[in-house]
Length: 77
Image 1: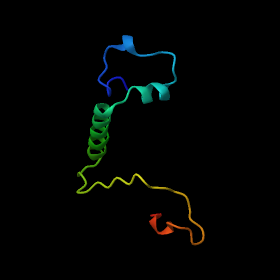
Image 2 (image 1 turned 45 degrees about the vertical axis):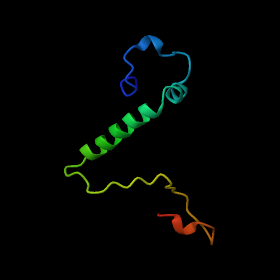
Image 3 (image 1 turned 135 degrees about the vertical axis):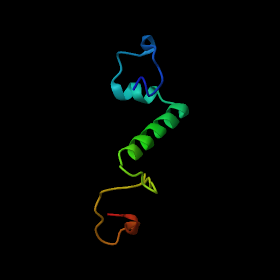
């Protein structure tokens, strides 16, 4: 995590909060951009042939819809 945030000076890393708290407090837009790049590049590198298209579905859910609920047609599974 320290490398992803480009923070090599560990003197400023807080030791007492839990890891999720440190994660939430250590991020900013610059970090988010770097993390996005790392995740996408890692995904592409995991394929023998890079995919032509990458679809990011941030609204995915695995909850089964029963009956005629509003929005049931947006469930892709």
